[in-house]
Amino acid sequence: MLNRVVLIGRLTRDPELRYLPSGQPVATFTLAVDRPFAGPQGERKADFIPVVAWRKLAEQVSQHLAKGRLVAVDGRLQIREYETQDGQRRRAVEVVADHVRFLDRKASEPVAEAAPEEFEPAPEPEEEEDVPF
Image 1 (cartoon, rainbow, N blue to C red):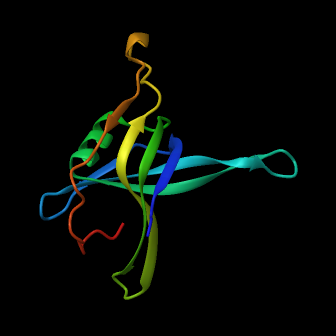
Image 2: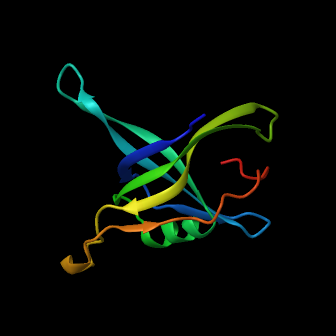
């Protein structure tokens, strides 16, 4: 079986870094990914895809990325269920990032440093129950 997702898009806001009670870092961000076709009036649409990064990758993403940055994410699709405080069952669909490659540079970086950076995480943790986003 295969569960692989590759996305290229722009961050819709700065990544949000949290630490679980175990001390493990987790970062979340949303990618705006353009659809490959235009609508009947020529308008372009985008999908807004939630992404989760763990451990070292989470810290690197939160440190180096910001709203508007162009990135490539390689990971897997994850669908998880959780229960809200009022007892309702919810389902979350997200991409768990294995690799993140920065495809543009910050405005403050000199042109000579325009090569993309790539960060790879440590192995993903065991299932953590206290991460309802």
